[in-house]
Length: 429
Image (cartoon, rainbow, N blue to C red):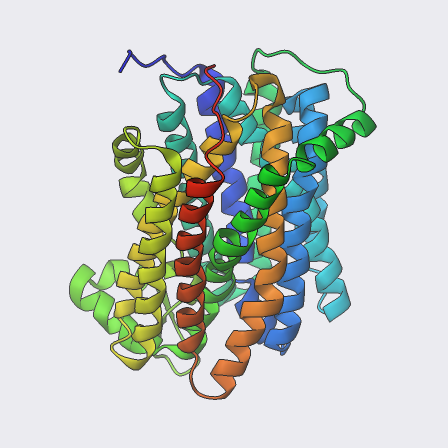
């Protein structure tokens, strides 16, 4: 393997911005199901908001990616912050279902504008020698923010939900200042095409039956159960597991200080683990992503992706077992899902961006977000609602077993697709 090219400073600035954005985004989103339950809304209502939120978050990049290709990443980043900040602050003022839904959709729009910009920056400043490591670092940064956001927000919501929302707003302000003063547009050819022309290009890309079918498969067999995990895990831990016993488990293994960091006393003074503080994969990915990315450099993307699906499915099976066995199994389930995620997700994102010429990175990542949008839209109205029905019947664990089957069927489907339709050709530079 040839010597890796060093990453320029904008690579690290962009990844810092990603940490802060994920801190705000996941700090709000991971606890959102608990927040809706706190306000007295049903899981069916929660599922509707989740589906619409994720659909908007991941379809908007189809448009924002084209603007980034035309006008530059920096300008569009600033636009996303100006949409983000007032939306988060509005969560402190509205409590009605329609108000919360509209506010979350506005946050989803802001997040959707932002999403392709940092990955597009990473694509623009990497080459064949450092692309896998570069996307691995990017994905690790996503999970640093995605880990500390829910932990901080969890502790703050134990005092007041408004404090949790305010923390997210402050993070957006810091992002704005970093972008204005430190982010420099990466060198690449900016396009002068209009939005109409870009949408026509997307239409042409989607007219490729093989590519469109591949995106559909990604939506149904990867992104659907992937987002269902993030929709449900914090709520599942909080509502369906013995969190007081989980606190004692953590205290016995990691000590009182760490257990206390991930928990809070309830109204009776019993210390319980906060669902959103442990119900994410970031604590595993921060430790292992770089090593996994370096290891996977020697393998082709699709076989790596399929292995990730199988490992994630094993994690779902264990998550279900945590309810009928010992609740501490939830940590094993989350660990396995995290290994599956860090194996599958960055490889498939890298794969799609490297199908694209460098000057069209935003457009191709936008196309990828169509697949994410399909899975995100279906996740709330299917699995969140299904979880509600299983939980009401006293069998909340069964939702994880259905999701595991979803992933295992997907592994078979992608192997068959690769075998009979063939892989896509990656660009050299």
